[in-house]
Length: 443
Image (cartoon, rainbow, N blue to C red):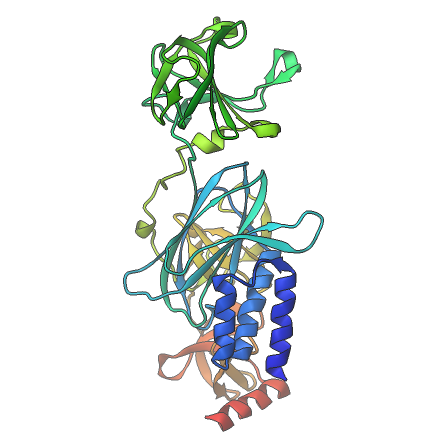
């Protein structure tokens, strides 16, 4: 009967998430069921569905280090980011050298006007990276979940990658000073490209292979070139001079002209106006497709210092924020000595979960390791392996016993008891007592 119910649950999740059933993630669920781990499979997949409904907002690039605890490895995490049309993203999962950690990565898009999700891409299990290209502008969800009972250290990097090379030689994205959509002619029209400033005569290169559709001089664009490749058209304007001719076949990186200020740019500093047009959609923002500033993270992720799993608030008050920025929205405010669970670490931030079930980021400088204090029990307590009712019972403590208390996490108190063991003390209730007896009878 239990297996039959699980099959129903799996079927529901497939119906609510198109193309989910053929993913490595779903294959893992089926393997767990085949091994007789029906309850574990249900718990693992329930966490996956929950994560999709409550993703964490991020800006690219994003990187974190995560220590996988077997008791908590079933927990999925989902991140949501806004992407431009055709923007390319690499999701990289790097287990440490001594870790054998299956990590599942899936990319989803929320169905328009519906509560369901459409799976667009999945990482193959024999690869450490998934390359994804957004089919349209919108928000995309990246769900990451380690395999059941996974243990080890894993680095996760989500970063944008340029689809095309940069169109001005020896220049990078920081040379873009005017962006797509900016007002032109007193607001009568919008800028349909980006302006890349450089010295006059700097070589302009083709971002893609293609054929020169037009090379001409016009009042607005000055010396300009149109290159077509499939459904894409690339527009290079305000050139000082042109090095190609109409009908010529062009290769990626070939010099096609030089930076200038011809046309209606004659009163401005030399720059290249670069535009990108896609079929019937017309002009699209080219910046995310040539932006090379997010390809590499400023700090090597392996240099990020790890953190204990449980930390205490050091400041009088500490805000849990929706993102790893001081200006991010406040999710919850914590008080001094409250415990939080560290899910992952970044350079100066920790991604945490709180006793109230909130998820967010806290600044690393405002936390500390829990400070132990002596605590005498006023009534019987059960000691659990984790701060949750379903966790195994480690021990039972009688009223009057003395232990070291490290702090509170909701109704659970982290303690150190006989033999230096750590566990979570909670008031013994009839329900927990019954579970304790069952655990003892089974051992």
